[in-house]
Length: 116
Image (cartoon, rainbow, N blue to C red):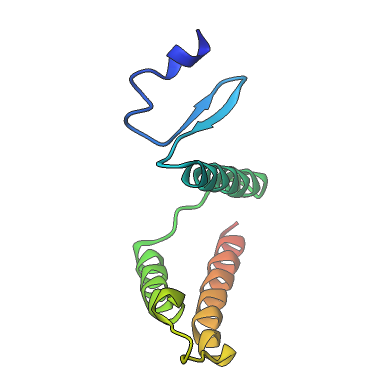
């Protein structure tokens, strides 16, 4: 009976939260379903922490654009699939993106705390 409660919904998404039961995830294989579960748990943790600190605060479009730009550059820098045995990546190559991301997160947190 419980299994039929997700009928009609599971085709539209890869994760469903069932009240008093937990999360059901699906994927093309067990690994993608597991990864989806990990993302759901991590998202729930972030929401819980945000609410513990006074509630979620949406990012400005400017900060979203900055994060997307950092992500785009990081994907190019951190794309290991394109590396071969002869390619050597120096750890210093990662510092700029990590530093930018850390600064943006710190500024956002400080701005949020100052507004309170």
